[in-house]
Length: 248
Picture 1 (spheres, rainbow, N blue to C red):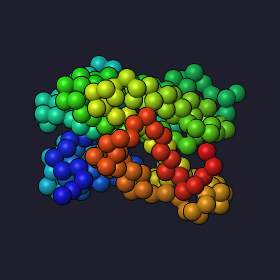
Picture 2 (picture 1 turned 180 degrees about the vertical axis):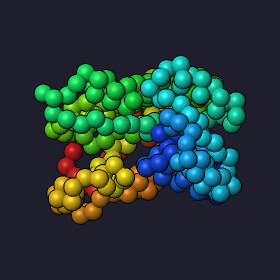
Picture 3 (picture 1 turned 135 degrees about the horizontal axis):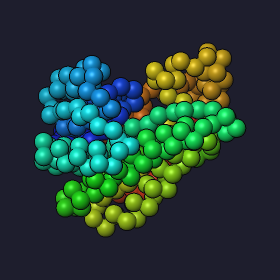
Picture 4 (picture 1 turned 135 degrees about the vertical axis):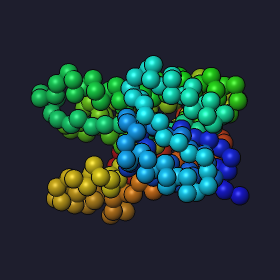
């Protein structure tokens, strides 16, 4: 039997990158997948097609994860379409890096809204559904820089650190209803975004990683499967680094 057979998951920001890898891995394990991104574009349609090829129910939804009303609406729509939701992966995120002395208020606000407020929005919207089911796994995509901080990323680091505090608080608040809440802290993962970094920067990062390679989106997706499945039924309130042994 597949690890997520018969379950339904919402994955935010999943038209591409790590979110897409998570959605595809979930589908390969028998999970029905509802996924969101900002717009219903070609990337979303392609992801939906790839998910359906696994023989599960799958649908993409255009939604702004940073907008509270948008999120309430899309979660209600997903619940109507799928009937139940056992897994929520809060993956939507952006970066607007820069030194503090040059960072604008807009750069700060945008990153906190997409990365952190979206977690509140979706968790708030899904809570009544999971509460009624007395079952749920909430997986929040944090980062190693949310644990250790990083120069020129104070907005991103703050959003990811906030996510960890939220994760641990919700684990204590919802645990009595068999709703688990955990965070994943990826390190240097090879994606379209990190692929644009200069080669010398990538080499420097990799030299500091004990496993001597960057991670793949699939490495992160595998941990999501563990946290979404019954294999982790006694795991909640935790932060799991997926970083190849980076110092965090």
